[in-house]
Amino acid sequence: MRRYPAIVPPIAPDEIVALARARGEARAARDFATADRLRGEIEAAGWKVVDRGIDFDLASARPPDVADGARVRYGASAAVPSRLSESPSAPATVVLLATDWPADLARALNGVRAHAPAGTQVVVVADAPSRGQAAALEALERGAGDPDEVVWTSARLGQAAALNAGVRRASGAVVILLDTSVEPSGDVVTPLIAAMADPSVAVAGGWGVATHDLRHFQAAGPGDVAAVEGSCLAFRRADYVARGPFDEHFRFYRNLDIWWSLVLRDEGEEARPRRAVTLPLPALRHEHRGWTSVPDAERDRLSRRNFYRIIDRFGWRNDLVVDRS
Image: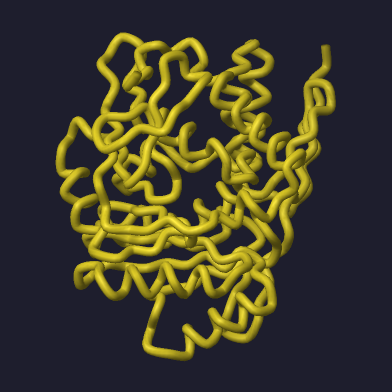
């Protein structure tokens, strides 16, 4: 059978073409797990691969980057310049997402700045924010450097992609994802850094869940848990480099935290998994707008779709169960 060359638009970067060709080879070898992984990398980089029999097409699958004066609004997480190849220069980076509800962001930022140790980096991802949120962030940028950096997007990327954009700018050895529903009333950073000093711990935070079957999860108090909730979730930047990025199919926030906790804990079925731990952190939790702002039927649908991604990858992994009942 004659093999025709792949049809690739000239705008596709060489590294994306190489990934697409490697994916084609994996499909030909019926190595579908590798093919799916490579498709995920292609999509995370902002490209769409369309199979044409034994060939493929590549097309841009993301909004464009937009220059706005000195500011760039990025159309994909992979377009954000990364610091991940640099040595850490801060003890911790706190990453927050800003979409709507500027008062919530201000409350969380004020709590971090009032109590976090000196040198803590704060990165806010302005994920196509509302007009009010954008105005508040622009005012912060004109002020005294609070936060340290704002990453702007040209379209709403969704939870996982927006977090990837923020983590790419992280200088801290420990990365802390903080939801704007959380108001630190004391120092939440130092205890999380201390928790991550234990090599047996993969992920730490303020709230977590336990399970007896990886299908039903219950809130669990301080101690070992199956997964840490995304309200306040800490991990090593080095682990993100090794095991990330976040799966950008998680556009809705729900269950991404469970998936990521299990990814971090997983050492293979033959090895003892690393631990997820929760601590009694000095913080208050307020209304979670990402939950309450979405109609019941829609958030249930989105939650189920995300949950299936956990089952597909970890549904049989009883070694990752932590049952606190």
